[in-house]
Length: 270
Image (cartoon, rainbow, N blue to C red; front, side, top):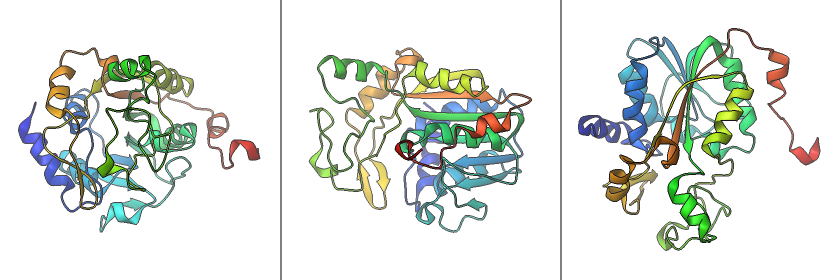
């Protein structure tokens, strides 16, 4: 593990409202950036002040814009778009769009993917990261009939899994509200249906040895973080806790067809 890069990620999240989860994926991103053209215009969908600092350090000459509907997350950052990640429209077109740990929070994941595709330049790059519903741990949990990790059936309580229950962190508003959760194959196929070419993929771990900054002044110790980081080295990518897809947009898209993914009403109101 790149300890220097890990410490820099901790520095980036300092004074931010939300910490940077799954820091290991950012270390993997550095390898990805070596294999794709240098981006000049970047959109971080669901990004925070912490991720903005990281991208500006890695792309010092690029314009980095953060799209988020929470002013708490963005502080005094200059390039900001206050819109909903699952239904946004922007004037600019971007070389690179990053949607890190956001799709699991939205009601309509199609809207997020469609909005990102419409905001990309032809052959632009889309990188998405999210928890893996089919990770090795979740497969074991489901064998016992337990709630899988990184899924939030309740907005108030952690239920159905004795390994995940933590009385200290069941206050309303802290639960991760992960509703749109995917298996590896499920997300892969959905991205392909929108015309994305999957040029690379990888898995990563959410564990870390030290306490993780969750929200504000609330810190969380990930269970068995050191052990999970160790085991992660030996797991196939498709069985790891988190998954990352590096995608390239097609040269031409049917904008009318893609826009159908952006629902503006609840399904039962259509």
